[in-house]
Length: 242
Ligand SMILES: [Zn+2]
Image (cartoon, rainbow, N blue to C red; front, side, top):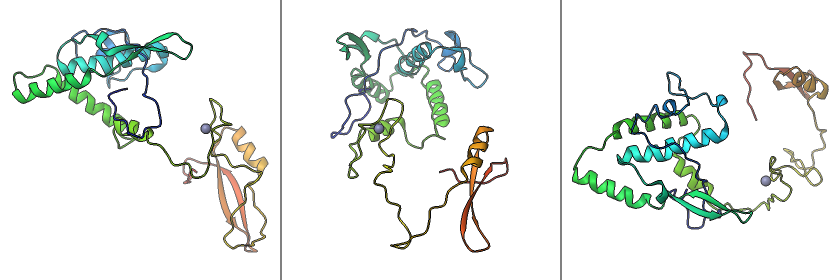
């Protein structure tokens, strides 16, 4: 989205967001917008995503959290055409994108209005409360704002290790996979010739086959050697996930 901050040295292209919003603003309560448009909400306001197609959910999210949010904050209907631009897609066709360029002037006008204190903006408190609720729901995932995440993701990262994505597929990134051909294990002492120890393979596979979580334990034998044991996790097992 063009309103998100972007570092000057950004490596990525401008984030393109397809315009998919079809639900018009209805001047209603911000929190119950989904219920009024065919997306029933439970007592906490949540929607059961399973009951809807991705396309209709995208329509809802953009209509509600972008356009409805904006209109509630501004307190008036906006002309959506001002927020949409046409762009060429990779196949030579055209695509409608959300364009946040008009936001700057709208926010400036809102700020000026607030300073003059001409009138109380309708619904603003309600929108504010709902936004805070959304933030609280996002809190377990991150303690930064979405704008900060978007900014950080666009910073160019140094690639001192010469990592390449040439062998990656759409579903799997192999850039950080170990190349077994040239990988050398590091030992506590140089020149160490101790043999590698392994998790018992059959037991591990058996646990996974039973749908359990294998937990590896480091055990010292009576001869003072180290071995690895694997057990299925119990409800009371404490373990570190790596
Ligand atoms: Zn990759």
